[in-house]
Length: 246
Image 1 (cartoon, rainbow, N blue to C red):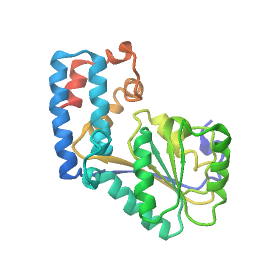
Image 2 (tube, one colour):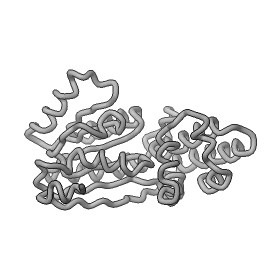
Image 3 (cartoon, rainbow, N blue to C red):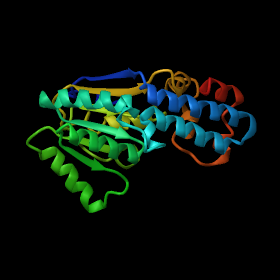
C-alpha cells in the first residue's frame, strides 16, 4: 500500500534538484582528480576505481575534505546551503540536512553556527542514549533548528516532523534511501507542506550518475553506497566508467 493510501491526510511533498556551479578552487581540484581517475581506468582494478569515484564525490561536496589546507572557497554547495538555511530560519522554518560523509556534516555545522544558526547532529557515532535526547530536543525547540544527520544512522526510524525542509547534500544513489530520509519529516504528524532539495554539482560525476540512475538503479545503489566488495565493483562495465569519467 502506498503512503497516500495509508495516510491520505499528509500534506503535499515537493522534491527538486538544485544545480550548483563549483568554485574555481573546487573545479581545479576536481579536474586534477578526474585526470587521475581516467588514468586508473587503464591501469587499476575496480576497487581502486571505486575509491577514485568516492574522492570525486567528496570534492563535489567540499574540496577541503581531501585537502584541509584549502580556503573557505572550497565548497559552492556549502555556501548555497548556508544562504538558504539562513533565509529559512529567518522565516521560522526548521530543516534536516543529510550527508553520507560525517566529516562534511562537521564542516556544515561549523559554517551554520558561524552564521548564527542553531544545530544538532546525529551520526553513527552518536551514543544510543543521546539519540532520543537529540530528537526530543529538536522536536521541542522553541526556535528554528537545523538537524544534521548521516544517511546511514538516520535514514529510518526517526520522527522529525518539526522540520518542513529537507536537504540531501550529497545524493545517495539509491532513490529508496533518499525517500526514507525525506520520510523522517513527511509522515503522520506533519501538518505543513514538505520541500526536499538535492544539491548537485554541475558538470560532475553527480550529474552523470543521476543520468545513469534510472537505467541501472540497483547497481548504482550498491556501488555508490560505498560498497567495498570486488564482485559489486566489477559490475561496472567499461562503458559505465567511461560515462562517469567523461
